[in-house]
Image (cartoon, rainbow, N blue to C red; front, side, top):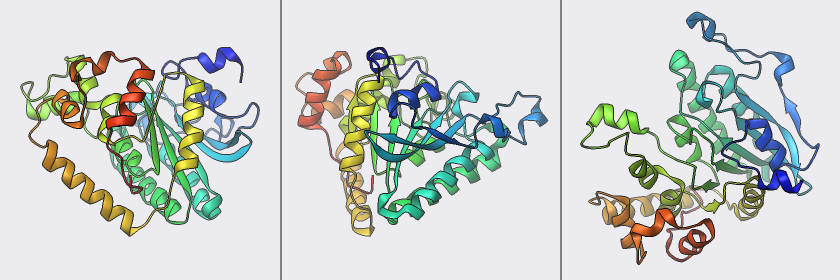
Amino acid sequence: MSLDLRKASWYEASARQRLQGLLDPGSLTEFLGPETRELSPHLPLFDLPRQFDDGMVAGAGRIDGQPVLVAAQEGRFMGGAFGEVHGAKLTGLLRAAREMGAAGRVLILFDTGGVRLQEANAGELAIAEIMRALLEARAAGARVVGLIGGRNGCYGGGGLIAGCCSRLVVSEQGRISVSGPEVIETNKGVEEFDSRDRPLIWRTMGGKHRRLLGGADGYCADTMGAFREAALRALHEAGGFGLAAMRAEQKRLEARLQRFGNSTDAREIWRALGAEAPDTVPELDDKAFAELATRIAESADDAR
């Protein structure tokens, strides 16, 4: 990887640029690429433009010489939202990983606002199929790592899928949640959540908070090189998957709710975790924050 590409922003990059920075040079073989023109059958009903790859780049490549399956969402097309074709490509990739068993290694580059409203039923079905395929792949021994640092974060069904991964890596710019800020405000009112309060959004859903809570296993800077190094570590660290791990993770989540359920702001949680100056956490640089996270962050069980 060239020096310029290593330093390039993950947040600013397209799906294909991220794969270029993540994988060994020239190693990507794309499945159902733009030339096959697998288009959404639903968008013409709404007079909306389509994209030849439906906003999902799926394929196989190598990272540090080792084979890996990859899927990258194009956040610049419909906010990376899941539709029928978009989701089917990821489902097929995960089913291929299941057949590979313990040799299966998958990297999912999330950048999504959730399900396309124009394909609501097909999109929701796609989310369910992806989650089932992902868990079946993990049960067969495959390792599935999610990388989150794109413009759209990882919301809606994407957040549910991310929660099924073996490991998650997030940057400060990455956001993980099922309900987005506007959805919460619409349903609960501005008193509950002000979607215009950007610091509140980053404190509640941003990468730093998710890492400290154990919602992400790794944290890295917003560069191609940093995400590549973090992905390699996550693939190496990803453990087994089974009922015992799921039960342990459920107990951890129950304990988290009991411990932090009455907190009204992330800064209260950071203080309880052991941050001496919680108000300064958002301003910490990547190195300082990584050191803090290593010291105080909760650790998730392999159930994720």
